Image 1 (cartoon, one colour):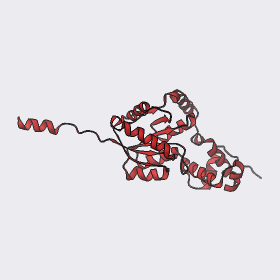
Image 2 (cartoon, rainbow, N blue to C red):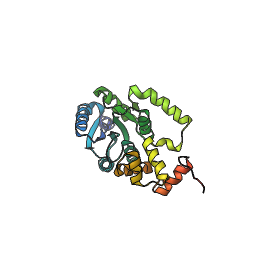
Image 3 (cartoon, rainbow, N blue to C red):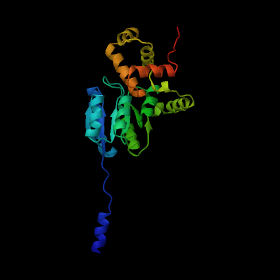
Length: 235
């Protein structure tokens, strides 16, 4: 009898470890508000907020250092866009679950996030109840997309499956810069043509290199020519 009781106690399942969450947003007030909302949901969502940062590059380090299970990130940050962050973070920790929390609802942004590996996309106007639903879905291995854009995203993904190409993973701005790079324009020339700072041009160029997994300018030129972005003209 005593042994039976001991066996029964030993067989009881342990409570699952809370999902370790890392929050990334470059606006301090937004981050504070989201953190407060997440803390109020922590028990219900079975999450533990283990860190937060305003910088994407810092987030990459913290993903490994804090052994994060879940990453919630904005898309627009000064040092690296959220889509690139998601791609790099999952490369470092393949089982990481990423959720975008953004004001952007453009299909291009949403689809690019999903293709990068995000399993959730929530609008910053979402209620606490919707955030809880999204976190539960992601925790259980499902996906969650804000209801107001879900249908359009599905249609967009279908269209992309029907007619997708290597250039589709780039934003319109990245295509512009790639074309000018392939045409031999310098960073300053590109900045002047597009009314951008040289630093912004360099950031866009680094991001498109990362998306294309190309490490040098000659490689970008070859890619642009192969995919019909620029043409070779003979003498």
